[in-house]
Image (cartoon, rainbow, N blue to C red; front, side):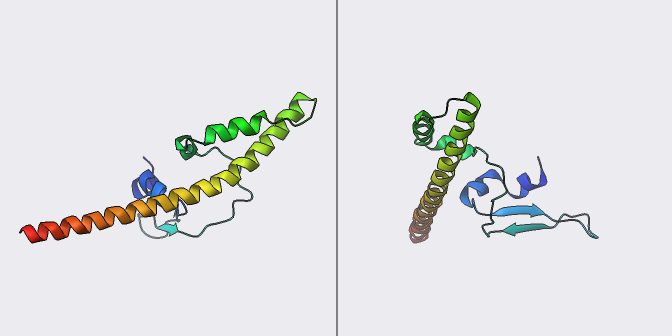
Length: 129
């Protein structure tokens, strides 16, 4: 297990998808200082990668299938593949941004419900004592 996984488990990653944990260089201590950043950074130069959470979304398969089945009008197999991949990347990136926002909103809503239920339970248990 890496230091990041022990400090920043995947459950946190799901709850706070815009946060980034970064290990800083050790200067004098044997401890590794960490920087938790919540700012959204530009990923213009980052390579495109399939996000694991996409598999949990029921509509991603249909989005891929519909996008892939569209014609590109190119005869060459290599060019056809390159154009389809480029188009699919753009489509998935646009969809991902919307889906990520919805996931964050859903998790925030669920957190509010859980918080209110816990407060209600605590109030109820206090009354019983």
